[in-house]
Image (cartoon, rainbow, N blue to C red; front, side, top):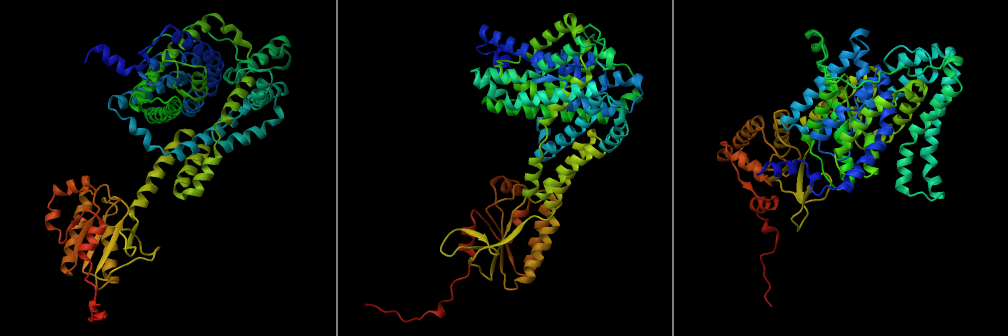
Length: 581
């Protein structure tokens, strides 16, 4: 295959790319950049870092994802989740090391993801169940909202857990700045009103629906601009002590390897791994959702490479961990993005903005940015899914609730880890005792169902045990005990059929257990048979001596087994007189 063909296979958006597409991408990049700049400043503030680090996180990471990633719509850069996780880590570090620590976190988390991508480990995302991720995000959103109240009220808040922050807020409530509170709450209320009634108003004034949706998504920049203009015009900084962003260096990021001692790097490894993993899961969820709407697809392996490369770039250019943004990616999608080039264009626009218009943001109130962050978090609340999960599966709900409360009580960096570990433990616990059922036949048919639930035909001499789980080391002993009880409860049994439609795997430990079961039944003059065995499992069994030692047969279907093994009817109950007319 030619190099050109390989490139086109990896970058299929290049096929048929035209000048009109380039113009469409530029417009999308311009729209996203307008939203991205204030968000970058806000998220850097959320991470407890200088505001310029948020802007740095929006330049090279965005461009690198465009090269290595697979989504046309995913906008990679600073996001609330990664910012809060970064804050949770660096807040425990001496202040003089926080900036370099944030860069180290980005570099290491990107390195982990890039290595996983090279190893084609995109399936790592499947280890995180949807209920756990949803509950984790909901808990993190609550934590983010509470953490931003200090800027809304302009008071000093201590602590990193919810309880500590709430206590601190109430203890300092008498010191709140009313002007900051008005601006912060006004920002939130304005954004809510635009979201709730913007489309109705647009419809009345006959604005196209797509244009109205884009305008509504860009409304935060207008609301923040109004707050900034009021601050300057009314001189709120000097008159009322309103806190603003302040001076931001109008300089582009430089390429520099973060310098710190080896022990400091080691202390950040686990946190970097978790930040990278959560960032990847969030990113691939957003990219897959938007790809489904566009009837296209994304590659999880390339997403690992893309998000990994973006974080490596962030670490080497004085930024902090990044991920895919749901809000900005949705703007990309709605504004008609045609290719990943939008990421490169966005990076260029942000870089130019830093050099030209950055002084405008000097007087931007922190309360306005906090209001923007809080409003963005409202869309992350998903209590309904937690409740639905509880109604459907208590085990899944327990894992989700563990993630939720771990975020609030222990820390955001451990929430998803606790939920995932618990969900795996509960899954293993459920498979320790696989569901089994004695089955019988609906009379006159070839259908076999649970004898405890249906009125079915059974035979004392032939019993069928359906196994509804793959067999492996953890549940092999349970199967032995189940069959032992079956033998005791059915003394007339001469044939036992293991019906295996749900058995997709039999590991070495389970195979040994089957041999033990076969020997024990043979000693009791009971033959062991198998039915409805998957071809793959049967091929694996042929590699061992199990089928040679099996006392009974392997049947293709359950009906074939019953027809071969069922006892002959007792004809003595019928008359031997035959009428011939």
